[in-house]
Length: 432
Image 1 (tube, one colour):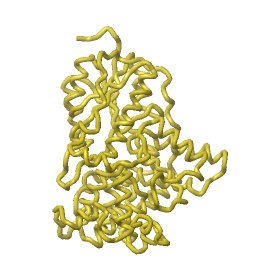
Image 2: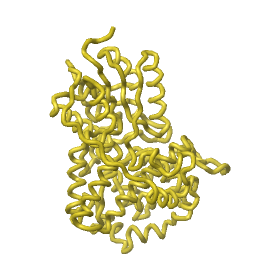
Image 3: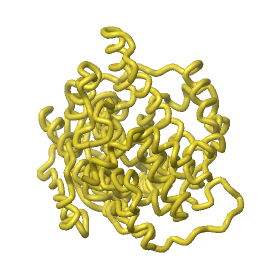
Image 4: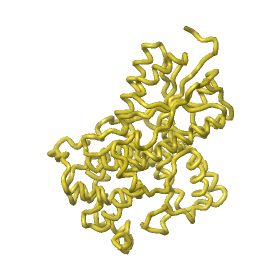
């Protein structure tokens, strides 16, 4: 039955937990008389995997809950709310379409297979209801249509991708943050779940959490501002590694979309105008380009990155068993001081820097000869900034089965150890 209340659009938030630079939200506000913002905690994101891990560990679960709560508070401040539910989105959302007489559903497109499959199943369910699922892209610095090549022709070699993109593509301006929104009225906006209700084995792991990361758009924007305007003083909280190192830590907020890559880019350009180019600014852009590259590679190659043989056509597959070598690596008890220090830090705060990630991955794959997918899956559980494309793409590269074979020789354990800890200070501190 058609409603007399005008057009209602359901805005399904996923890894885009922000109001700034959000095309999906901007368009929904302009096209609808009322919008219904929804977040769905999908129980499949917290299940045990075939790799002896959980899909989401306790540190990232905490960060996710904080990020959803922050978005809800922002919407409440505008006179509305975020409807928070638990279940499979492809079942939950079509029921909401009926309940609230929704005309259209908006969401951001993802690139990894599980997320894409959920979108397709939802699209099928909505099609039966004669309701359109509109896809948006908003996770990358460069939109795919702005690249100087179609997806199928994107160079596999990162340096070529970087060179051509920086030369020929343009970073678009950010979308404005909505100043007023008309919301569908809700009797009950649902409840944001506790960590313990999402995770099965949360009690023991909760004791290990010691992270300075706090989720949410407000935290993300505040941290970005502080980093750009007082960057000399910012170091990674709790890290014993390279106390002098300036670490942006932006990746966790980027992964959940609390922060837009374009917002980071343009705010950095503003800071450059004020202070000149600081030496660490180019690292920000490099990090954003690597994120884009792996997302576009996933778009180009689909599931290949998840396969143990990756892009190699031959090779004996290594077993997926939970060996003592794997367990010692996870616990930071290999006897290799630098590896153990990095793994203990990962387990405590959910973050280690890129060189540390490459070091512990190289050790697992090349020294312990453990199947790389077991390491990638453990990172998926532990990393607070986990993003499928970056994580699995980087691990495949370390294992020598990635799509850019020029990277295959970059991962030498001794070389990485010297870069990470030239004086052996980090390992000594942790052992003490």
